[in-house]
Amino acid sequence: MTDQTSTPPDMTHGQDRPPSRPPMMALAMALLGILLGLLLAAGQLDLSPEILGVLFTALFVGMLPVIFRRRGTASMGRSAHTLPPIPEATAADIEPVEERIEPEPEPAIPVAVQPEAPAADPDLVAELRQEIAHIRHNFERFGNGAPIGIIIVTEDGSIIRANGAVGRMFGSRGNEIGRNWIEFVDDKDRESALLRQTQMMEGNAALEPVEVKLAGSAARVARIHGTWLDRIDDERVVVLYFIDATEQRSLEAQFAQSQKMQAVGQLAGGVAHDFNNLLTAMIGFSDLLLMRHPPGDPSYADIVHIKQNANRAAALVRQLLAFSRRQTLRPKVLNLTDVLADLSDLLRRLIGEHLNLRIVHDRDLGLVKVDQGQIEQVVTNLVVNARDAMESGGTVSLETRNVRIDVPEPVGDEIMPVGDYVEIAVIDSGHGISAENIAKIFEPFFTTKEVGQGTGLGLATVYGIVRQTGGYVLVESKVDAGTTFRILLPRVDEDPEATRATSRRASVDLTGQGTILLVEDEDAVRMFAVRALRNKGYTVLEADSGDTALEIISNGEHEIDLMVSDVVMPNMDGPTLIRRAREVRPDIRAVFISGYAEEAFRRSLGDDLTDVEFLAKPFSLKDLAAKVKEQLGG
Image 1 (cartoon, rainbow, N blue to C red):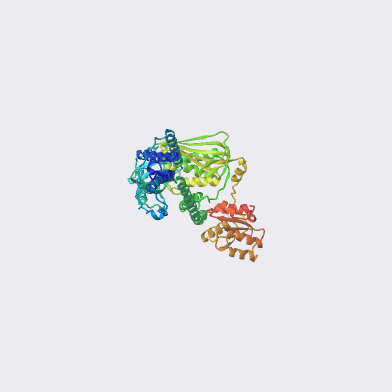
Image 2 (cartoon, rainbow, N blue to C red; image 1 turned 60 degrees about the vertical axis):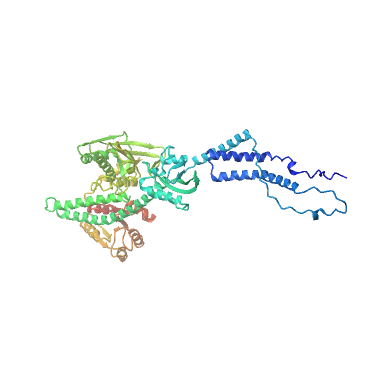
């Protein structure tokens, strides 16, 4: 029989068992948590709330084995204390144990004493520091390499974080930390920028971006997005994202300017067409009066003045058409050396005695095919601009030379193709043009002159004429250092002798014979043209519309030799009229008269009307008689 005081070998008390040691991984996790806490408290880590959440979640999972192991040990100790030793008894006294053991009430769970943390593993700490530094370095590269500006600002607007793009956008060169971000916004936009920051601080994240102009001379535009963050160092902050919208805004402005230029061009073309009808009548009736009032007549001088002013008005209309690129050009092969030599006397009178005119020509200068009157207008406008830029005197230089373009070159929003060109350069030493204005100088009605001193059409006319001729305008200017306008015209290899022979062939006798059908809806123009042609010996039938003209042709009462018709008329235009007329008279010849450009008119015709001729309004009696005689083979 065994000793009653002896205890079974498996019933030893829990307090006598040595405590089990936690696994090494759990200790490492505990150490890492302590280390992170210390670094955060010391301000050595700058990690986002999301990254911190991930790290502490991983630490918690790693510590689970330590927590549950300690709770298991405490439970085992408690079970050993609650089982008393079984006393020795006789067989009769033995009863089932479960019926004699009274369950004791569950004692309170004792508070576990935290064991002293083992010493940190230096290698592990170094590895963790290196990994954290690597993560931080990658995040810094991610932020600094972003193409948009990112800043973090406090409630008072102070910048506490900024990436590299901010310095490039603000022009602050990295010294923006600690400054108020509103300093980098233009004065006009600061109020809206501050309002948006306040709205973001209040938690309004779903806001449309605000567009502001940045301070400085670069005229940069930024679109600002933003969102609020949790507190940093017990202070509420906002993250602002700056997207550079300068180029986009520039493209939008160019598009709007293009639409404006097109609209003004259409308006100018329409106004010019109506004015050309009026001027045709004024010039034409002046010619008729001059036929009855020769020099020496008391009315002769008055009539000449009327005609001269009508011609000046016609020149102004040509400028409007030149701007809209709708004027009629009469190109011929020219040598610019001869053109400038003939123009030099006029230019010297224009610039005055306080300026010098210097003309330099390149050797073997190439030929160009241009409208002489229009290219003279271009040079005159540029020289007048140079004169106005040099109020205190100086020299205006005109230089010509041959130019070879070997690779396509951008000129504004166009590309100048490869080829040979002849250049006219107009150089002055005046006050120059600012960068702000140089992009606007070819806009219609834009001028930096005083009110009443300029129409704003001079350079717009230059641009329109040169581009319609197939050339390009380049501008180089510096404030207080002068301006150079370079006109590049395509070089041609045609023989100018044929053109000269045609220009010398001026018929003194403009009389003729034949039957002319004149179709014009403008009464004044029709009356003048009918009288002018009858005075030259022609039989003239007149019609005020296309329908009336078709009736005259269909009657067959007259053998019509030539039809002179306006292009734009109510109900039936000129091209439709000639097509229907040729159904009756296939051999009928035609001359179209119009205030619009011949080039635009030709593009609207089909292949069946390539043999028709064109006379631009306003025209004189001599112009009309010469064109009719030319078509009738006179």
